[in-house]
Length: 381
Image 1: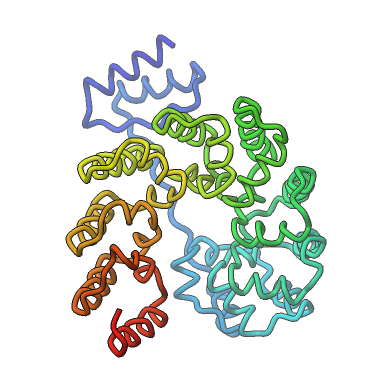
Image 2: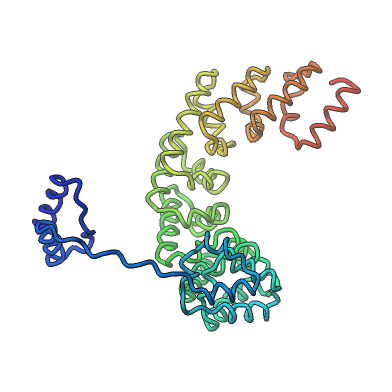
């Protein structure tokens, strides 16, 4: 500890001098650094960067791989001496992948050529137990090579599959999770278990009756929660409960529904967006109760940046829409400001009465809105 303090002091006294990392906290290592620093001895020269493997490039080029893309994605792979590109190609071909698909997979995720045939076979079997269809797995690899090749830890994948199925996630739903967020299955089992434990504890503290079902519902609505830190999720949960003054039943319903996505936001972003929304709605004459009701029914608004949200609200209000109508139909805020302005201009030119007919017309697909507008032009509102 004394040596570490001395080192920090030296850094403050000589900010222009560079020291080697002292993350290894042994006395001998730190003493060596201090001694070298005081003596003025130069640090070891950097290792030369290994050049690319030319025969490997030629081999991949013959296979149709986009070398420039591979170089941008994972340049170190092209310097490897030992690779398994031909074994990989033969393996994927045996599962039904075309030459073009194989080349595309390697171009976008070059590290795939470092996997051994035994590893590939074992991993494929694990995926096959979930999907039960080789053609489906090939489609997923073509769409997202990273989902299959990112991790080389097959045992960890097996444990995570068993853990999630043990939580009650069915084999019908497991493929959706694996396709949507493959990083979840690359997590250590302890990380996934820690998040599930947190969610179950939340259910318990809120008076829930089925803690596994609560965790399962949140994960299925927002599988990305498993790749977030428990610290972030805990902070977001605490903020929502406090800021909205939710009852236990309100919190349980929100979190198992649309509110599950909110937990994925950065804590700073959640606070900033909520505080802006609260302030803006208060300035437009909304009560705290109305704002709470909006959050329970339109929590997706918390994903919109303050500037964009304010622009949308101003556009609607200036276009003649009462704020109460917006509270009843918050989905209109999903559309861009430009789209809302154009629609309001079109409807106002026809003297459309929003007080009588409401604002549901603003929440229509482009095709359906244009069809409705055409009828209004012919028949009148």
